[in-house]
Amino acid sequence: MSVAFTKEESSETAAETQLPDRPVSDHPNLVTLNGLKQLEAELEKARSAYDATAAIDDVNERRRQQAVPVRDARYFAERVRTAQIMPDPSSRETVAFGSTITYSRDDRPPQTYRIVGEDEADPKTGTISFASPVARALMGKSVGDVVELGDQELEIIAIA
Image 1 (spheres, rainbow, N blue to C red):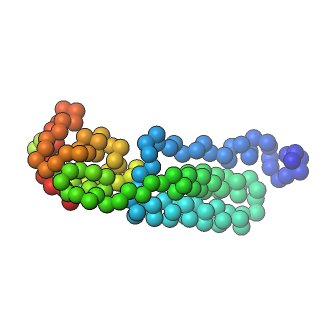
Image 2 (tube, rainbow, N blue to C red; image 1 turned 135 degrees about the horizontal axis):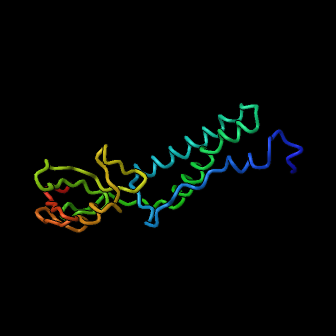
Image 3 (cartoon, rainbow, N blue to C red; image 1 turned 60 degrees about the vertical axis):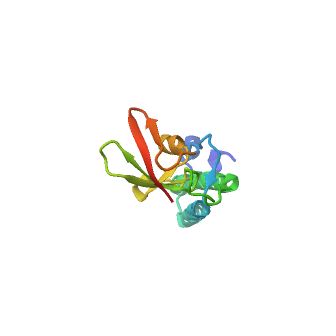
């Protein structure tokens, strides 16, 4: 439809409201069951935010307000679709996806993290991505093992 038949100020206005897709990692989309639930909740949140824009009368403002929810809905729909649920580790002998590990690093106090999917990782809450350098260095290791990460050494103290 021609711009002449819409309330748009210009044909560029529509293009300006389309945001580029969120970047997606090249790693497989491994998730815990909780991680899948988080992805589904984020998808529903994006859809609800999009629906909330329906009440905006101004076409250009509505498009601007829809840009983020549309982009997020595309991202989370794809992440839900490609999610591979990983079972909890069956052993606490070695570090695996889903393991909670405690390690010491140089003179710092011990740190504890659970290894989870990329979208659910949040170091502030005690989770790190399986694709992170720390997780990759610790995968497959056992209590007492020491791994080098850059110029530091990490010693695994516990696996839960």
